[in-house]
Length: 235
Image (cartoon, rainbow, N blue to C red; front, side, top):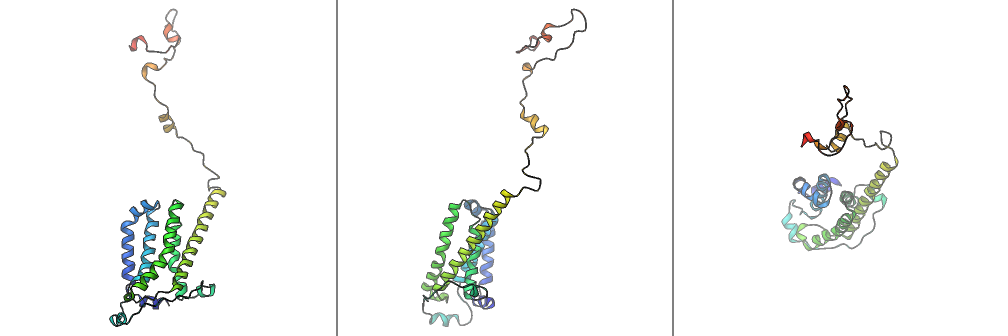
């Protein structure tokens, strides 16, 4: 089934290459706009590029012109939710489901959640837009089908749900399990840093250290009685 899909999409590898190059070029700027990492932005572009490549690029095999000449838009309206038995084998329904799972998984890595919800809503509209374009452009030689919309939406929901659950479980594990060092590490300040945190006093504000008198009448009263302010010799 996968070989048949690749044969029906001769532009699969060029489209994948363009998606990879586009993801590498805009991963940093897109990551900043989405509030995510460059790797997440790269996979977002790659997943969208894969969807466009497999659904909207024309079939350029032999007798393309003759096929376009007699192509007529025909929209199949019958649909059903794919059953587990259908998803266990490689067929059109399972491939359409798998096509949107990476997109749902990437959306769960977007922060804040409000932005992720907006992207999820846009991803839910995407299957309807794809089938509408296929119906409006018969020269693509794509057959619009309501079953494809149902399969794509199921794949999107599976990707969103599975990776959201994994994200919540990872947070719970970090909160409940102690770290490898035996709990939270206490934050200590090293001696050089602690020394930097103490501001140095000006020279005229420092108190002199009293020295014991060496003989009778040789003691200096100003040294025995510390007082603030500048000393006469410092003025």
